Image (cartoon, rainbow, N blue to C red; front, side):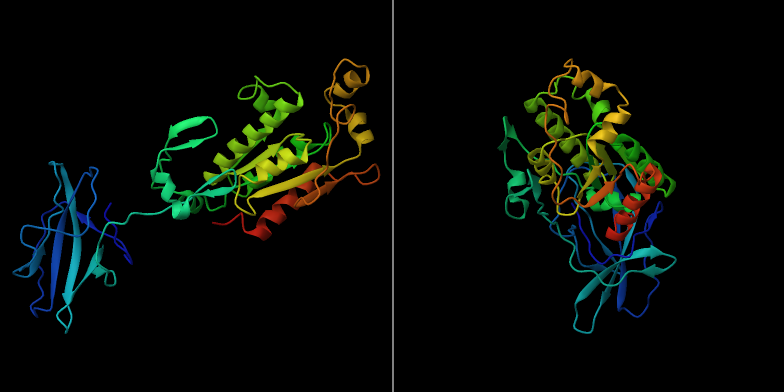
Length: 335
């Protein structure tokens, strides 16, 4: 990978390079062939004769195999009073960038987060074969396009908004209202609804405690991918146990897991009973139903509480606007 810093831009021209018209002898123009890239790494610009020839410097990238030529990248060099040579890239219309440091290859270091913990010092372990859980002989392959670039493209910051609460508390309704409100502001979202995910990815899981934990873990991992993609992911599912929600939070950098508690009394949720599940649970036809014969553990330190009572029934749209205000305040609606 060829890396140049402090570069204002480059210009490419299909025609062969022309010598500089400078006559003072203090500056020269170098043209470097720009070809279809193959995998290579450069420590510096090299050529058969890296000295000045006439009024321009000839430089060759030294590819191991011939590649089609698609144009030229123009580099400007100037000689200072001390005899040193500095370089700049053309940005078109005769303009050029400020002087560049020596062009060299960079072996970048990155850090991966596995279960919320950094894997290796400065990401060094990413170049090694490793074992994660039951997966052996695996290696992390890092793409040159990272989360920051994706966020810049989308003009937003990726995160997971985790909406938890009893069945019938309005989680899915608020999730969709929030998605609509953010869409109207030009923001990209995706809703991971608990029931929807069980139609496919998690269709092999039951509602027993062990499977519920696995259901939440998988959705947390999917949400982590959406967040890394720069998407605002909205997960809406009962997720009754604190330890499972805490495990999902641990997957994310601080601040990127936003927990929302739908604080709605059981009697209101049961009165709504949109799927008729409370009635089935009360009659004994469903076992282990949250709020009836299985506990729900409300969050202790969540980011947002959306409260409804019999006397104060805030609309889903108003609740969504509360969340939008939080995202705006925390900077998630800007890159």
